[in-house]
Image (cartoon, rainbow, N blue to C red; front, side, top):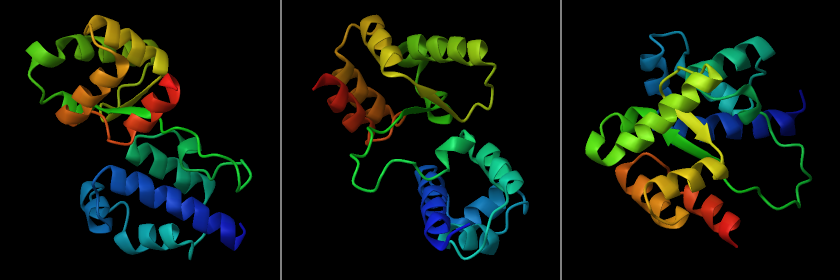
Length: 166
């Protein structure tokens, strides 16, 4: 693995960890010692090569597809794609059902169709957001703001919606 590729991979690992609000020690605690802070940190810095097996296990731990951890194959000058719409299912569970009921039912249906029951995060498509906007009788951008205020979507989701609407 080239040094530059290892650093890009490490940056992806760090981004996923911080998106989930975890420190390196938080990873070690949450994994009950399976993932040592010093090892994950060395992966993130690109100081230590990660095997495909360990990368798959880390992706599983973070609840993301392995390809989300791999550096993109686009040239360095290419425009950055809009961020993915990732729902935080753990936070969704704490939103009162009178507000979040339709979203909870919709995400349960997607999880059932995908056979994806990790219960932490769920990636949705722009089409899913448009469908949810119809259900909530709001525009996609207004619904996005509401989901951000609930803590269910990250603030970077605004860019994905703006890119779609422009």
